[in-house]
Each structure stands twice: as C-alpha cells, then as structure tokens.
Image (cartoon, rainbow, N blue to C red; front, side, top):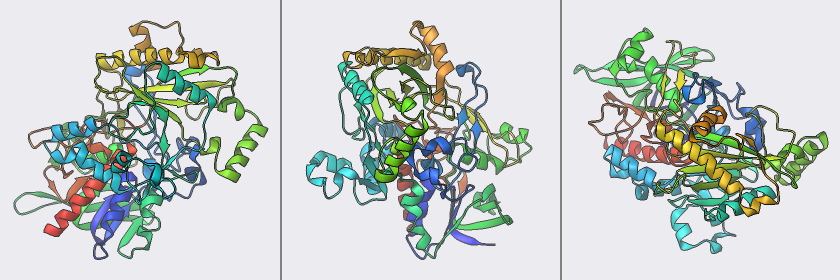
Length: 553
C-alpha cells in the first residue's frame, strides 16, 4: 500500500499551490490526485478558449443546478474544472482579491485574527508576479503600489492586450455617473471603473498547473501525481480512545481501485462541490443526508454542504450603433480569419481577451458603506455561454451582487462517486437580494444613459426598458441571471462554538485528525469579487500552517 507524507486531493488552484509548497522539502513525499486529465488541450491556453472548455467533458464536470425558484424554475449550467489547474484552466482569468473588509469579517467570524486583511496581504504578495513591477516598469510604480503587490512569484498578473472604443465609452459613462476611475482593483478597496488585470503570460492563459506544478514539481523525485484518478472515499480509523483519524483515500485509477496512506495529513482541495461529495461519501456530514443514501455515519458534521454562496450575474444587453463589437467582427469567415491571424502573429486581439475586459465596482444604493456591485462589461452578446453571438452589434453589462444573503446547499444524491451531487444555490431567495437585483439594473441604466454612451445610440435589448418596478425587475433578474461560477462556503471554517463550522480557522476538519479542507469551500462568506486568487491566498496560508505543524511533530 503506497504511503506518502501528504495526499492532496484535487489539482486545481489550491491543490497545485499546496503541492508546490509541501514538496519543496526533498524529504517529504507528496501525492497529488486529480480526477481530470492533463492540461494539454490547446483551448485551455488560448484565452478565448474558455468558450470551448466550459461544457466540454474534457475539461468540465458538467454539473447543473436543481431547478431554482429564484430563477423562476430554471436550471443553470454550473462549470467546474475537471483538469489540471481546475477552474483556473477554464475561468475568466481575472485577478481580483476582493475587499479588505472581507478578510476582517473572516477574522471576526472565526475568532482568528490571522485572517485579517493585513495578515492575508503578505500571502497574496508571496506568489504574485505583477507586470508593473517588472524591471522595465518598476520605476513608475509608487511606493504604495509596491507595498501592496509582489514580484517574483509564480502567479503572473498582466494587463489586457486589447481595448474597445465602446468599453472606453462605458468607462467614461460610469465616471459621469459618479464611479471614479481606478487602475488597481486590488488595494483593499476595489471601488472604481477600469480594465481588469488578468492571469495571463504573453497572451496565453496562466493557469495554476503552469504556475505551480510545471516544471517545478515535475522535477522533484519526492513528488508524484495521478491524473484520471477519482477519490471514492477517505479512509478513516479510530484509535483506542475512539478518536477518528483520516489515514488516506480509496482511489479509482485507470488501472483499478487503489488505497493510499498518508503519514501526516490528507488535504482535501476538490472545491466547493467536490470536497462536499468526498466528505459525505466517506460518512462525514449531516446524519439524515448520509443515512438517506445508505452511508454509515462516521462523524456528524451538520455544516457539510450547507452555506453555499455564489455570485449571480444579471446580464443586460444593449444594442449599439456606429462601432463594431465582437458580434460582427467574428460574424464572417474573413473576420474570423483576421482575428486568428492577429493572435498568431502578435498574441493580441479578441482571441487574447478574457471573457470580461472592463470592470466596475459601485453601490446599488447609498445605504451600503462599501461597493456591493461588480460589473463585467463585454463587447459582445449572446443568449448563453455556448450559444452563438447575436447578429447585431451589442455589449453586455453583467452586474452581480457581491454580498448575497441567499444561502444554498450541496449534497450527494447517491452513494456512487460518479453521480453528480445535487446543487441548490437558492439564488434571490431573500428580500434583500431581490432588492439589490432590481436596484443594480437601475444602476446599469443610469450608466448607459450618460452622455459618453449616446454617440452609440444604446438600445436596451434585455431585460427591456418597459420593465420598471421592483417586482418586475427582480422577476426578470431571475429570468436572465446566470452564475459567474464562484461557489464558496460549503465546508466553512468557524469558531469552536459554531455548530455549523466544518473546519477550525486553520482549516482542520473538526473531530477528524489528519484531515484539512483547503479550497474555496472553507470561506465563511464570499469575497467581494472573483474568487480564484483569494483561494490561492488561502492555500498559501494553509501551506505555512501545515509546514509549521510538521516541524512541531
């Protein structure tokens, strides 16, 4: 039976960083297990290729939500990366930390000051490689910027390689509507409007497999990686005193079922859906959920699978005139050929673009002290991901509530690991979330009505200007809202007296020795922005605590 010091389950954002940090000691044996395949699919690395990766069984788990009352009974596609790099191989590549208040709130909810912003900032900086701190740019960077950002780390941050007249006009209109311009969304407050910075390198997607695994880990003899290997359950053992310990995992590999042992710790980094599924299949969770699937309860933890939070984007589409958007640029074979040629020769143009180029953070109403809305503005429009672009020039101004109060659940629906869990986000299930949704559509209209946009004669195509009341707008938000796929919170950390906390503040699973959860599922509340880089920060903190614990043992 193979034995390792650490077994990491999931080679996504958190798992890849953990593997890098823990295998740095040549005396430490590390096994990284990934259910998906290698990241050798060309569309992973071409930025616009996310359109070919989402909904593709080669790279996506192909999850769907249950019919959601808040979405007027609709189901949503729920993308999750099933490939080396996890969601960093299929996401929007936006580098976003969130707001300092997010981490201060984590500290308050967990009772651990280590999660305060000032203590998390060094972890962000540790693995960051920011383009503004490159040798040719560093002289222009302010002292404040250098204090907030890092250079020399593995996680590359670059500016986008294209601009659009219509997006420049939207940015100007946002300023006319009272949203200040910003050139840095990652200083603790992300209020403002500007182009997003992205995790790319020279016009190619920079995923966590390239950043943390290749070639560093591949060259270490103490590191082993299994791909196409799905964990069926964790292996557990009770000591003479009745205490429960995680000893390893049972894994379905391409050559059969294999059991592996962990000498020190098992680190569950399968994400907000996968980590819940593995815990429940192992008999760790809420008793009724487990018993309903014929699974013997090994350890009661009622919080497993609860507290699901996600960002729901409400996609307003505006027809525009007097400018070209991607809708018409890519509408002909000649247009597609020119786009492809530009990317081939220069690594620029539409094929280099993230799903969203322009961002803005603002408030849905003056009652909010901090920005509670995030905009992703795109020079294109379509009915849904995977659908063709519209035949007219248009932009999409997607807006999401950064701090939803709705909470959902993820639970297994079968004792079979190959069957997807039931995902119930419960979007727009609170009066506050419905009010923010209605107000956010009004903020979008206010921006588009500013003078800077009028040269393009914007016409609201969706949801439609005839809809004005709170009730109408909230219902329409349910009709047109889609996930930005930022699920968090389903194995949340918390205080010792919190009955729904799955882990302690150092991410150790309560009541199970030798087991931690290290991924976005441990976030007690969702960050005020895109969640990929906060997950890396979280893994960086965890790696430090794991190494400290090893030195003490």
